[in-house]
Length: 469
Image (cartoon, rainbow, N blue to C red):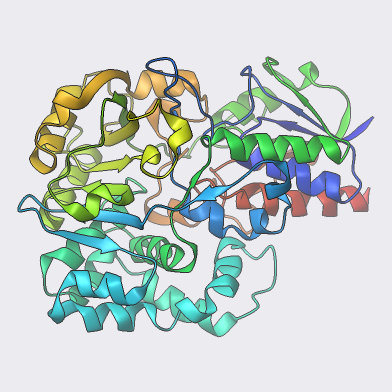
């Protein structure tokens, strides 16, 4: 009998398996798809030689993850590549605000009236970032806080809505960039805890950047799987699990799946019936015959580029999706251009690029033309560079990854109390009513993103259980 079986080979499932194997437990991972990776995969989606990341591409949370930093993933091929700028936020007039590695460069891009306010915002937290990240990403209390005072101060600053935090800023460059950071979790700007979302992304950039993995996000997943095998664990792909009886006998079962799928497989009935799924995404992967022709020079040097004319336009796009149930006319876009720093991603002189906007949950329309009209406002001539495109709306995203219910790449609405307490309001989010069944997906704290901390935290709950039995 195995000690633990993990269902789902995304970053959280693989991390949970690694953490258990490192402590001497026998572990096997079962994945429905033909390769490991979940939201961290790399495929030729458009043309031969163009390597795209179907979901995550830039990794500010992964490079800062306490879980990943404790693992020897570089020995297994993981290499982080940093663009000149982690992120840029261009404006239609050719100017740009930037999220740079240094606070000074970032603050300067906001203009003299907001530079000081930004410095004051991040100054209490950046020198203590590693401890704060560990404490914040271990909530609820899977480990005692190392610096409870800084964690409490961060909570007082970040728990209010981001709209309140942004009152510190007077001009649009700072407001727009920070609004875009918050919008990464596809939640309205006025929601509980949204200030913390923006702060985490900003601090992560200053601490270690927003890198891409050489060769694509698959490199991170492959490194985790290779390390797991060296620890004695096994990985089985093309193995769809429909019920617990499909799995070998084990003392514990750990699910890197949506709460809905876990309840169905483990026979938990309506236990997660109140869990809410959020808006979907519409994503376009591009093969380009040259770099994106951004008007703002800063955007040409950035790995990630946020696209939204101002904070009002970004807020309106989020409201359209979350409250009005329609696709926005001017969507807020998150774009990543990996080949700016990684030449292995495309043939010589060519580039890969992706952009996604938010759409209502389960939306079945086509946002391609709307996305490209938005891009043309900031990069005139963009369409002339397109060699091929691969589009994926909510149905296609859900088909690629069953955790993306209705196209929700956050694996659950990151709004209201569910931003902090997921998948249920409890201090034991990784446990289920079945004593041998656990959940470790992005539906658990600390939530969406490629960081492995949900798997790391869940593994703690599992090994405590195993040592008791």
